[in-house]
Amino acid sequence: EVQLVESGGGLVQPGGSLRLSCVASGFTFGGYGMNWVRQAPGKGLEWLSYIDSTTTTKNYADSVKGRFTISRDNAKNSLYLQMDSLRDDDTAMYYCATQGFDPWGQGTLVTVSS
Amino acid sequence: EIVLTQSPATLSLSPGERATLSCRASQSVSSSLAWYQQKPGQAPRLLIYDASNRATGIPARFSGSGSGTDFTLTISSLEAEDFAVYYCQQRSNWPLTFGGGTKVEIK
Image 1 (cartoon, helix red, strand yellow):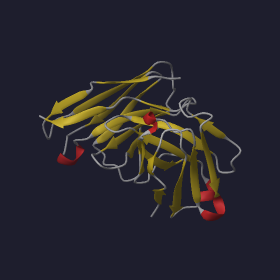
Image 2 (cartoon, rainbow over the protein chains, first blue to last red; image 1 turned 180 degrees about the horizontal axis):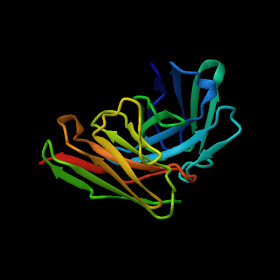
Image 3 (cartoon, rainbow over the protein chains, first blue to last red; image 1 turned 90 degrees about the horizontal axis):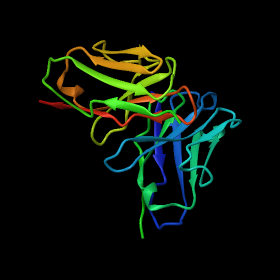
């Protein structure tokens, strides 16, 4: 069974940093691109970032470009999202998803507040 | 950036009825469109990819159609577990974008 498990969320002050992790199992992680998507409380879905299987290609939404960095460690079956210069409007549930967005992890909640 | 507009925002129907959800793109996305279902407190689930292909394990009552700028998700006969929020997503151009969602609620 394909499974994605996010971690690393929590409460952080504006201007702070956080690193999210997503551990994959049940498939050949190193053969697939991966995505991060977020959802603010009561709002819709926002795609954030994509990384291909070899880390050659990385794409970002304008809202996080220059502040967030996607990376991966294929040896550890892990995907990461380094989030810097966090703002109040970054408060959301953060999901990782496979290249085909099937499946998604259960999400990790990030709250940015002073 | 490609903007996806979903309509209606809310659809009030009874179990057994047919649901028709619309997604319109601001420019052509060819057939690179997907549909997701999200229930409260859960992650989204892929229903349809490439406009009309059902994802693994998705019941046949869900179908997708369209190409270019106009797409439709149809649920042929609503069951109790289908009442949820549905999102479309274009995968044609970066950045990938989602529509604002359609809530299908019990009438």
